[in-house]
Image (cartoon, rainbow, N blue to C red; front, side):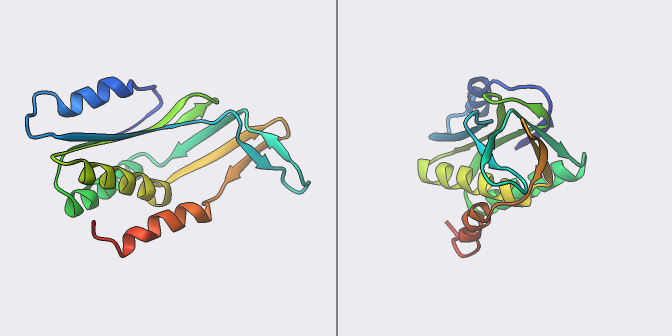
Length: 161
């Protein structure tokens, strides 16, 4: 298991290769790479209409954030038999096209790898202490939690696998 919160970019291919390197018990690696979207539109505060996002800044509380990510990974490991997990979340100022998050899970079987990867990402969106500020031509605004993210994470409350 490995969790990193960092400003530096990452190489998803290298991370996936490292997760399964030298292991003959890994039958599947599922991964997710989140990117900052260039076409994302945000509602203009107090005005109607939308404005394109030019950049976003991700902030976190060092120490607390890593512990939260480690707890999410530990919960995934308690639900599924996993041979390895790698989570990277970037912080700082990111522009459209930048990689922002990486989750990869190694398991003996694809079903467990897919489920655990999706679980980790859903919980990361709702339980990890990150703060996101979007920049538009009209200025910046802090972004709150989305109901769709809460709904996605909520389904894991009743599902065990």
